[in-house]
Every structure is written in C-alpha cells, then in structure tokens.
Amino acid sequence: MPDWFGKKEKLPPLHGARIEDYALIGDCETAALVSLDGSIDWLCWPSFSSPACFAALLGTDDNGYWKIRPKDEIKAVRRRYLPGTMIVETTFETADGEVMLTDFMPPRGNYSDVVRIARGVRGKVAMHMGFVLRFDYGRTIPWVTMEGDDLHAVAGPHMATLRTQCLGGGSAKFHGEGLATVSDFTLREGDEVCFVMTYSGSLDKQMPPAIDVNAALEDTKAYWCEWTAKSQYKGEYADAVARSLITLEAMTYKPTGGIVAAVTLGLPEQIGGERNWDYRYCWLRDTSFTLLILMHAGYTEEAIRWRRWLLRAVAGAPDQIQALYGISGERQLVESNATWLRGYKESRPVRIGNAAAEQFQLDVFGEVAVALHRSPEAEDDIRTPAMALQASLIDHLCHVWDQPDEGIWETRGGRQHFVHSKVMAWMALDRAVRNYEKFDGGGDVKRWRKNRDMLHKEICSKGFDKKLNAFTQSYGSRSLDASCLRLAMVGFLPIDDPRIVGTIDAIQKHLTRDGLVMRYDIRETDDGLRGKEGVFLACSFWMVVCLHLLGRTDEAKAMFDRLLALRNDVGLLSEEYDPVNKQMLGNFPQALSHIALAHAAFTLSGQWKPEVYAECT
Image (cartoon, rainbow, N blue to C red; front, side, top):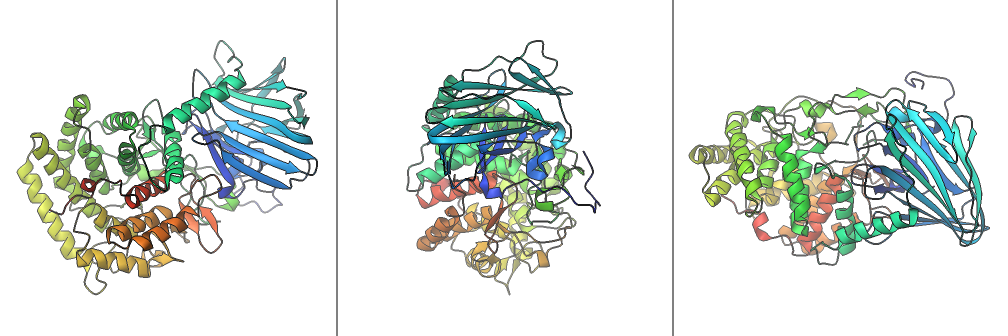
C-alpha cells in the first residue's frame, strides 16, 4: 500500500460514509460497522484491538470493505435493529422491487462469524456483492484460494473463509475482478442468499466448519433478548436506555470483562484535523462509569467481570497505575501513525495505539475508588482484594495529589493542577474513608481523613474564581471546563451551594455552542494540538443531570430530548457533534456518550439512588 503523505497526484476517492450512517454489529469480542449503503467498512479481527481487515472507513476502497446492495439506483433505505438485539435489518427499495439485508455476528463459539442475509421482499432486484479484504489496517493483500465454493484469504497468521448458502430460487457464485471478489445475483420475493465470513488462524489444522445460518440467527436473537430482559430500568426513556446498554455490552470484551471506549480509531474531532485517536482500549474512568450504570440496571454478572478485570489490570505497585489498558490488561499501547491510510475525510494522522497510557491522570484514583466503594457486600472474594487494592492506591495518592497532571481530557500541552483531577482525588480519599469505616477495614484512616480535608480546602481556595463565580479549569486559571459539572455529581459540595450553582450557570452561559456543552474553550486552553472540535456529548448529558439536581427539571428534560434527537436512525452516538454542519464527530459508537445518556435517563426517571450522590463531608 502507498504512503499518502505528501502525495500531489490525483488520488482515488475516499470511501467512508457519514459517521452517523453506520450501525454496529458485534459478538462481544469484536465489532463491525455497517453503513446505510450496505457496506462493512470497519472490522478488527479477531478482537477489538486487533489490526483491521476492513479499513475503508479511514481510506479508500483499496483499504478493505464488504458491500452488498442493489445494482440499480436505490430509491429509499429503511433500517432498524431487531428489538432488544444487535441484529441490523436494512431494507433497500428500487424501481424494480425491495430487498432486506440482515447483518449480525453470532455469539462467539470456537470461531468468529459475520453473517449477511440478503432476502427478496417483492419484485425482482439485481444485487451486487463486493468483497475486498485487507489485513493489517487495510495494508496487506491476502493470498486468496478457492476450495470448492469456499473462498479462503490468508495473510500471515490470519485467515478468513467466505461461504454462501442459498434458499428458494436464489444463487450466487464468486469470481475475481482485479484484487476484489465479487458476486452478482438476482433476488425475487422469498429468495435468500446468505454470506458467512469466518475468522480462523492460518495455521489451524482444520478449516472452520460451515454454520447453520437460520440456527445462528435464532441463537443471536435469543442471546440478546435474554440479556436485554434483565434490565431493571423502568421509565419513559426505556428504548434509549436499552439501546445504550446493549451497545455497552457489545463493546465489552467478554473473556476479560474489559470495556473499550469505542470500536474505532482515527475518526476525527474536526474534519480534516489532527485530533484523531485510537479508542479501542479500556479507560479506567469510562469503565468505572459503566460499572455504576450496569449495577443500577441490574447487570451484576457484568459488573463482577469488570471488577475482576480491574483487579488484574492495576495489579502491581500503585505508582504504576495507568489511565487506560488493553482489553486483557495490556500496558504497552505504543502510539504510531498509519501513514498508508488517508484518514476519514483526509483527517490525518491516523493514530494506532494511544500515548495517553503514559500520562499521569490523577482523576483515575477517584474513579477506581468509587467503583470499589460500590462493590456488593456479598462478594467477599472480590471485596477483600479490592479493599487491599484501594488501601494501597490511597496511601500512594496521599503522596501525589499535590502534583499537576494531564487531566481527564488528556491534554498534550503540559501538566496543570486541573480542578477536576483534584476533586476526583478528594473523592478517592473520601470514599476510602467511608469504605473502611463501613467495613471496619484496616488502613491509615486518620491520615486519609486529614489529606481529604486539606485537599477540599485547597480546591475551594485555589480552584474557585470569585469574579467568574465558578470553579475553573485549573488553579489560578480563569478558563471554564465542563468537567467541573461533575463536582455537583460526586458530592464535593451540596448542589445548592452558591459556588456549584455559579459553576453550572457559567458553563451554560459561556461554554456552550448552540445550547450544547463544549469540554473547554480551545482558544483559552493549551492542549498541545491544532484546530478545533465539536461539542462533547457526555458533557451535555452531565448538564442535564446538574439541571435536574438543581430542580430545573423541565429545562433538563428539554435538553435531554434534544440530545436524544442527535442519535442516528438506530440510536447510536459518537463522541462529539458539530452543531453547525449537523454531523457526528469522533470515534463511534462512544461508550462515554452512552454511559452519560443512561445516567441522565436514570436520574430524570428518579431511579438513580440518592446515596450515589454522596452527601458533602
């Protein structure tokens, strides 16, 4: 594959659709994005953090895709998830008829499968399938062979097998066109052509067996419907909460319990800009938020898996704790640039790996402390090591809370004394004191209490600006930061404290664009990067919670309804939104956006237990 940097000759067209045009399918170990046009443009195989084998989302056709759609002009497209599942149905209408494409990934067995069923609904529709497999993030062309009707594509340790099954009068055969595999076929009412792609190791002694497509479809329906039925959320936002919870489960690596922040890398926070990150890892703060949501929704088993992942991931000396880890707890997440990819809408560099793993982010101590604080009392096998871990982390925190850090937004402009980070450190100390008092645990509680009170006093003195009547981004700064909305949500001060009310009002007045909340004002913050970004959806949901806590419930609900309207046609959200060009920005789907959505819905519905909003000490 060529290196596109610095090229001036005419380039092939980019492939990716709008971010909001994608739906997610997955098997709880990896996931794929399917566009409204019937094209799978992103899939990392065999796991979320593996190199992509379809990467046209971040480049051109040459970087890999799998498209199934009518040959002729499409008059209309309708799409939905089967209720309570991760099964996507896309209906294409043409002048000659109508076809439905059903996409899903069955729950993982010995192999990982992507199943695509094209079915004739009415009339007679000519169809085309284009299959371009490129391993190593769209870079490596595989060696393709045919064995009977089965196609095998091999590159290094990887192998993908593509098969077809036909029902009714349907039929489809593969043939090569250049470096692509294609199939042309016709569907009449009742005809079905099924395509199944299966991942296996190229050194495996046996080929993966063909699956029963109808049985796989029913198994997948049953799996997701059974999972969805466990939810304890009851309220007017049930559909939105259910879709967010399903999305979070689909982004969970089931073998370990780790939850990725997104299934993509490189989707930009500004079209054409450099704010393009790899989010296929597990952030402690994101997964801690997820834990609380899962516990409130009744998903105890998932919460237990996550806590076990946490205990494994942060094992070792407390000064080695990282803000993020790999899906199995890996620590080495070296960042590099995929120079052969042109980027989503020419947004470069395309970064693989994430150097934020090397940053010092003080707030993660607080996120982990809350997660451990909420451990169910009956789980002695988890609580005992969790309390030992917490004691170790808090002892270390007493030595480092006075140091600057890179903060929740992982800025690259140098460390600062971020107010949000200090408040989360205070919260870690506060929850540790409460936890050990509650369970009569060991630890130097007297020292912890002293540090907690010292830090609270310092934050109120150095982090609050009287002229702004608001807590600021960092000590001595006059810039606002939306992360300070969380001060009201963690019990740092009572919600009706004038300093909290002033902070919420200041952010609403000065840190919004078209009524939605930005993380911070880029013009006032040296984050080490060029360009701008969209409004941050999680921060906007945080504002909903704060408004509700202030008693401004009608205003909160109106804002929440507006945010729900920003979801795409199947209920998914990215990280950010551009209110000027009316488009999603950032990696997709974004776990933090869906976590914040669910949290706001629980709050507005009166189902977020009061003790979660801890009383002020």
